[in-house]
Image (cartoon, rainbow, N blue to C red; front, side):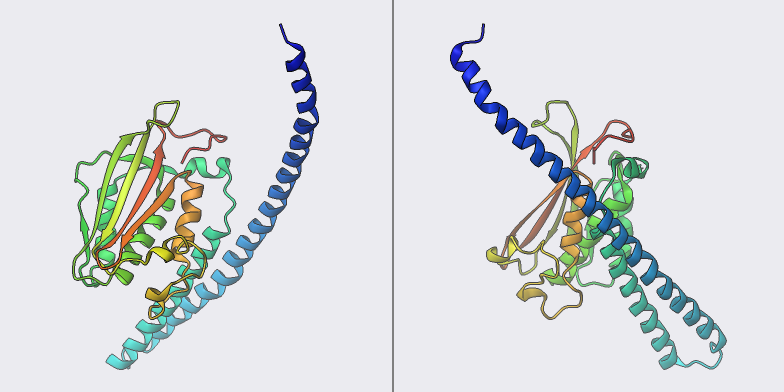
Length: 276
């Protein structure tokens, strides 16, 4: 039976609960408003910037074909550099699109695929073969396929490996490892995918680690390199979409370890489930 004190406490809590409910409704309305703004910005960036870049690429291909017989080595280098510049712009546009993404569970359910992590890292290994040190794939060939959002994981790993190679500046390779562990914190039993990207580079100053995920922040180590400092900001945004987290450990002169941790659903989630 409820005591007098408990009744008084419940009565006093009533207005607070009502106020909290009102604040929650205001926050929900604000989220929906921002969702519309971000979705509109994403569509504008994706359409209005991607379309002219596609046209530029097409016309460059036409010119390259038209003057192929007359082009020397110097002209071919020019065409190659134009293609590289356009590809860099396309990558920048893609980064903005993902950063502006307000994820919808219904939207992402179809994105889940069985992913072969070994093969995914092998592709990155080939892509960055020209970098000093390169990439060392320490994931076993028979590593079990994992159910994750393939496109999101590709963005995360590509940026982490690229950052490690560009900013680590070591003759040692960037090493990628992976393991599946049980999540002991969860009430329901589930597995977590842990991926580590390790370099033996110059490391990140402790004062900068908290800021490296901020958009456009490049730190002293990145002043002399290309890019706008969007890579890790994009990674953090994509990790939020995947309901995972990323942790950076670094020691100057010894290197950096980026650890990605993702929940793995047993089956493809339904349209209203927020798993990974």
